[in-house]
Image 1 (cartoon, rainbow, N blue to C red):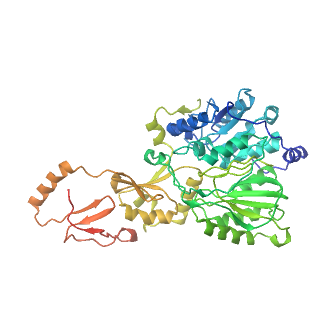
Image 2 (image 1 turned 135 degrees about the horizontal axis):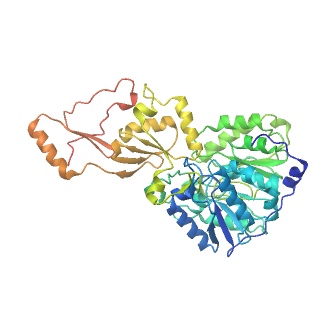
Image 3 (image 1 turned 120 degrees about the horizontal axis):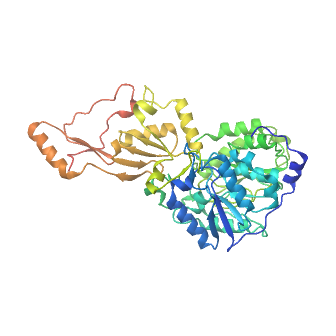
Length: 499
């Protein structure tokens, strides 16, 4: 979309949104894929999420093109196919609510193919998050209907171990639009990032080991339309839909893309007039400790241009886990807010193995990702963050052991899974745990070593044994390789290897 000046009608629609009728157990939820083709890639998570909704009493169906994979593997079919699915869901009288399977880039491409009059004639709740927010704004400004933001089928309903209780509670209360939705503080949340495309990790329930609660940065009362989204999207949303944030309660959070918040907040302030806000609600940081995040946001708020000239407003940092009418969570327990204010190379995945093998970026390190100095350049780091922001899992694959891979992960500044040791060990740097370990089988190894010792009695052995470098006494360690400061051999255990 290009910059847009709202018409009088669009402004009137945004200021007087219709809330679709209540939806509850026994009603029919249609799952669509407006962006990424996640359902085709991870069918086990689809089945888990469907069971959760059916256990809550809902009927579940899938859009005609929801399981397609585009030619480049990034979306569920073409924009026309995805838009047709959304329009068919609004037109179908048996469908009572529409739930996005996942977010990711692609939702914005649907807008030109939608029919606002047909949508307005068949209002029903739409639920999405992240880049789905373009659909939320479209429904508000073009069709005049309220929608929900903060939950998706795959991310939140398909949570390993089952959807969080508060996610389901707030989802059901948000859909029952006859009742006010009141958000309460939760005792804990999770900040763990899980790669769905590693089956052994995807099935592990995430730990909720981060304290919950809210941090009030500017106490007070704010009243107004609730508008917002992920911080990187807000300037484009305001520009594309010609929005004014005057007398608005702005909500925003930051995703797992690893970008620093300070330049993003500055960009938002440069491009969006924040001086007339009625309030601001900030989501918890996915990786930063609550106290540190509160200090960071407080410093940012103090730097808002013209803040001293605006009337007092409340600023609150809200923990994940609440579903609100108007906000959202990013791969964490969901908040669900009511929005205020086949052809052409398409194909279906045919097996779990095929599904799990496609949607990721895998990088070698030495001679590939790293430059001639053995470093991650600023340009490469920026490109990798764009990959992560687009929703593509990033994995490393290297001959290096885990300890020599860690500095690269730290330089990239993004928690990830790495296949190390020429494929012998897979390590999750986010959870600090070994995912898979496949050493050389001992059976043939003993015979081979016996032959080598017989031929070379002075031989000394060294071996990478999971996370240890094990060396026999007298093993000569080489120095660091020129230009590669991360590869100095450092033994973690001096003892004879045992096979």
